[in-house]
Image (cartoon, rainbow, N blue to C red; front, side):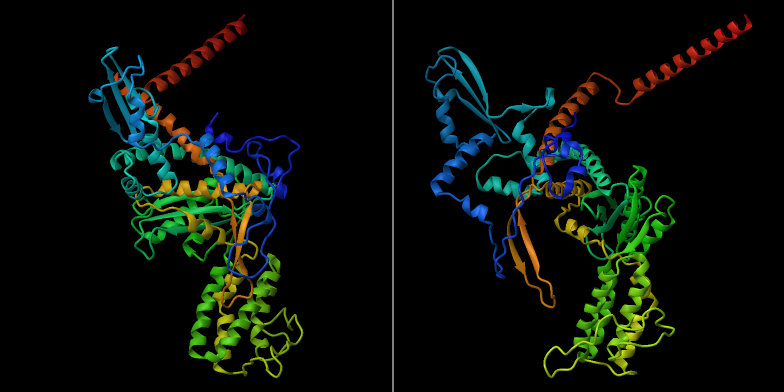
Length: 571
């Protein structure tokens, strides 16, 4: 059974889940769900507020220290021991108990491991003591911590130079930088890819179950390793908008075939590969939302396997270009600043009020009716510009303050003509009709904000980031990440308050799975070295010969049966 099959323990059938995840998650991900904590924000200050459950659980300092000591004794697998304290253990012989001559005691460092060889003159025996057990087989054996340190640093995002500086500051012996990089390259990379394959299969199963046969609504977006047109790598992620789980990730380099050194082609090629991979694995995709990248849309529209997917534009990218146009007008005419705020309140209100596809033409005319609204006109007759909407959907607005009238623009003014040209531009009309109201690419931006980037291990860092992100999302689905605090983030120019919620740490079981799988990879490498040493070929010639002989036997058997049937027919 693969190690990733036990990501979360099985539970009894009478256990309950939050958010009806019992029908979504596969059996191996069903576990007892912890109780959610309620929101604890009582004031509008900027500090964290902790729930009453956490405050009641606080104890005295002495009790906490004792509890930490007991728990660390249960969890700890390794301990840091000072040399002066360790030398006391080797005063006497472990065989006969006589005092040892310390001049005959040999101490040797092997990375993080310590080897002590004692020689007793009384019993004439040499005893070797190792501070760590070894993992692997044969000549590929390594001390357990020498094996675990580089892989653990890599999957947690710790740079090896900083790790070595940390060890030197504390006078700790760690493996050399070269040996750690070799372990990551030969062992860690293979283990990461194997565990990721298992997690990817499980996550896709969760997402398909959650869709209930209606097809997935996904968001797709790319991230380059540097701004501008000088980037060398790009990763494209596909995230399900319902469960917020990343179901596909593609890492590309501009040196690959089809890119030909042109960085701008990376995102479109990555988006196509990601969606084709999902379609090949029989994952139904109903709707796709992305930014206004014309190359992405063109490739998906022309490819036969992705042409059936309904393509939508992310709303934030649609209104971003319009904001830039407004900023230029406000900079030239500061009196338009109040109109700027009025327009975008109107734009967002209409956009979210009409999310359905069949209502978008009406919503577009309502947005364009702002040109009448700003003149103080709330009803008008049908014409070439307004074929559906002939009046505003609200009553006459009152002034903000007593004695203060709302800003209006005169017909024929330069400012009004600029707004009219912007609202009735074909580019805006096409983008507004194609924009999505209920799904967006903000979840991709959240993933990109926490993803790791490395120029030498770009793909591996992407796989690690996807597993890290998916583990957090699965913990949220299972209700295992309680809210332990929150804070209010005030933003100028925004009417809605943003609340940043601090949650408990994730389980991140994938890290333990990688560590276990890495031991198996080390053993397989040892077997491969032995096979190479005794001259066993590394290709599949024996498997091919066996398959060929089985096919021949099958053919001979069928030929004999045909001859027997002919003899029986002839009598």
